[in-house]
Image 1 (cartoon, one colour):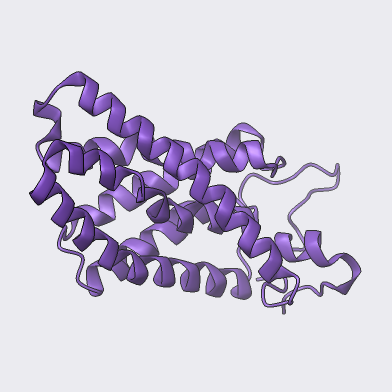
Image 2 (image 1 turned 90 degrees about the vertical axis):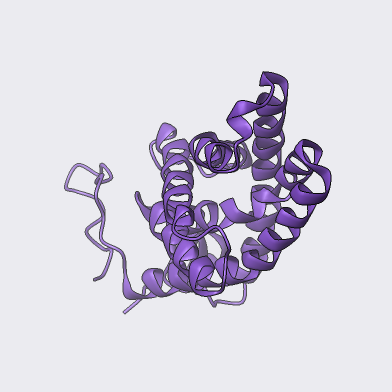
Length: 212
């Protein structure tokens, strides 16, 4: 499953690219870790919403960038279309298996989050991996999945100000968590644990080795 055919004879990058075994493993690990660790955050968020109502909904939105990280990082590390969706859906499965009380709805929201994270990098043709695009990916992750959550929790029946305020907070949270996550994983890549990925080749240069 080597990625050596990712470009054609003219040097143009293919739209659809195969994932290497190491990339799939890395995306799975990211999805599982962020999914399992995210479940306790959901319980805390539910507590705040129960205790504080609409204010709790906005407060919970401030930490929801955590749930967008799997998609942002999956795409940033592999730099291939569809990586964000795969990593996010794996995260959703991990959340359900680890006891997320929101149930199957998580699979819908994580798919939409991954879709929008991918779409943000697609704007740059999957060639621009700067912090502005990381922020765009993190912020965009909130745009579609938010409405599923809002409907599920009855938020769509409240004021327009609350709805727009909460989604703005989610987008800001997604951007900030994206910056933090990428900074951490760029440091991690220096150790070689992301060997064979595009991020590994960028960070380690000649030290990087292609995945088998």
